[in-house]
Amino acid sequence: MPAFDVKIKATVVKTVRVEDARDEADATEQAHESFSVLCEGPDENYDEETLSCDQVAGPCPACAGQLDGTLHDDGKGTVSYQACGHVAYCY
Image (cartoon, rainbow, N blue to C red; front, side, top):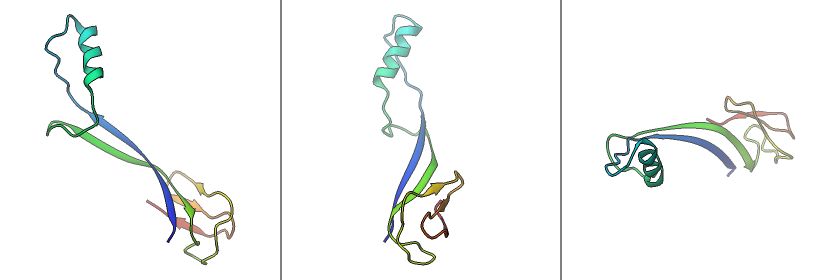
């Protein structure tokens, strides 16, 4: 089985209520200090985007040749095999 390194960018959007702040700067600081990426309620928005997917071990799915060197990710999910020249797709 091949192994893949998949890089994911995640965005979390939440509203943090601060009730005991002296001013806006204090409220902002307290909100940042209490912020967590854990799912804490229904009013949260989570978004994920795959930045890259690189096969790091295993045979080429096209010819079963072993990988030799690094792989190239063109940013669209295409990974080029350096050793044999075949192309595989990872989304």
